[in-house]
Amino acid sequence: MSSTRVLAVGALVSCALLFALSAGAIPAKGESVPSFTALDIRGQEVNLDTIMGSKPDLVILFFFTTNTGQDIAVKLRRLDALYKEKLRIVAIGWKEDESALMKFAADLNIAYYIIKDTPALGSEKNFGPFSTLPLTFILTDTKVVLKSLVGSGKAEADVISDVAQAYFQQRKLPQANAAADEAIKAGEDPKAARNLKGFVLTAEGKLDEAQAEFGQIDSKEGLAKVALEKGDTAKAIELASAAGPNNGYADSVKGTALMRTGKLDEAAAAFDAAGAKPGDDWQTAEAVNGAGRVAQEKGNADGAIKKYQESVALDPYNVVALSNEGSAHRQKGDLKKAAETLEKAQGIRDDGMVKVMLQQIQKEMKDANDVKRGELIRSQINDLKQRYDALKAAGKDKPADEWSSRPMVLAFLPSSAEQTAFFERAGTDIVLQREIESRVQAEGRVKVVERAVLDKLLQELNLGSSDLAKQDTQLQLGKVISARMLGFIDFASLGNDTLMYIRLIDTETTAIAAQIKCSVKDLSNLNGVVDGVVQEIVKKAAEDRQLQGLIADAASDDAVVINLGKAHGVKPGLKFMVVKDGEPIEAGGKVIAHREAKVAMIEVVSVEDEYAVCKVVKKEEGAQLAKEMHIKQAKAQ
Image (cartoon, rainbow, N blue to C red; front, side, top):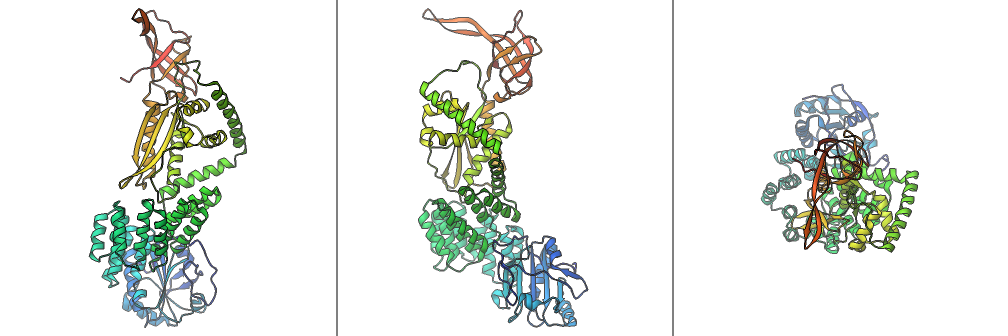
């Protein structure tokens, strides 16, 4: 084992509030500790900034005397062996001579840094006063105190459990699991360690194993959490209610269950009760975050933001609370603050929801600062409004060219359906909708009406979701914005699942062109979920329809120009039949139709936005191609 290693615990990010360190006061949670450089008993330089620069998981500072710190020093040795270079430990012997410290290290087989306190180090000035030793600090990798333990009583000596908890907060679950097992081996409180192990298993999705772990210690709050994650909200409430009057986390689980079933007032009361009762910081943070989520759902964005910030002050690793705060700032229109909050969350750990939301907000900020784009949108809105008014006054009309397929343009509109799904991550519905729009557009075969244009147009026309449910409005709006299809995205809860429904409406017939359904309960792979939906949309909108058009120029069999291009979903290699009316079909002495006669087969060679160039691959004997002749997409062989 390397003697240069220092106890470090998981890459943590600083609390939302940092207080200047004042001399003569023990650094409290959320405060940053001063830097220092010293030599350890082996002559190695120990620089706290250098240690932090290596981005350890956590760093532990341990102040002790040789007759007060043995128990904790041995436990730190266990952690040093368990986590190798990722958990760094620095022990400072107060008023001890170097020979005593060397004997202490040798007797306990300690390999982590041990430093003799010196006036230059100023331990008591910067970290004291030392009225009671040992004193243990668990730090983030930004020198911020995550937890401090004063003395060597039972609770203070359970340092391995505290490290396990810190790993759990970081969602470094294998490390948390290993530390919980090590805490039990070291004789720390087995119920607390097993309880944490059960929460780790729950976070890993191993619900049956978690249930067995909680069952061994009759942890009602743990069993309630498992029931909640299995979708049995009634059982979760029952178990949480049986946990006793002082179990804050049970109240928090109960609040979440009530929130999922739409009982927001009862949920708020449960979260408030949980926040007022004793509990580990991460548990209280979950309750406070839940209270914020209820406040936001009720329309109180400012109150929600305050709660989310309180939650992060309790647990600086609470990415969910930061994500929710970012969503609340976005809801208020404060994109700069939203981006700052989400960047902080992204710095803690990789999170799909945070990453996508941040990308969307950064694009919105860029678009909002584009003056020319804003002027263009305002001009487009005026033109579209006039066009809508004219169409509404004139009534239904037919296009001059009824044969040719229109460009595949899709507009996603607000849904008139009642949303029955509740997302614990604020803004999940908006993130999914915007990401689907963006990726359909990026795919290339379907053009999506720009969100900024659409929202402003609907506002100018004073069209609400109830208006958009009317067929006449859909027809007129489709013509105004040249949309071939209108898309509606709805969310609903079904048992233990949350589903997203997408309806595509044909604006020429107002018939449902396609319906897509997928589960959005687990968004740990958000990109995969969105990509799957986008593929379905493109398939329904661009691939599952037969394109029709006209020949625009037929001067050469090697360069037949047609009036369909990229905007219609045309790509090289696509084949079209050139057709004309053949023999008449009569009924009751009246011609009711004509048989379709195939003239030639052409294949697309190159494609532009509004047209494509084709070559003739087959032609009926004596046939001549001419401008305005009909073409129809050939079925794949």
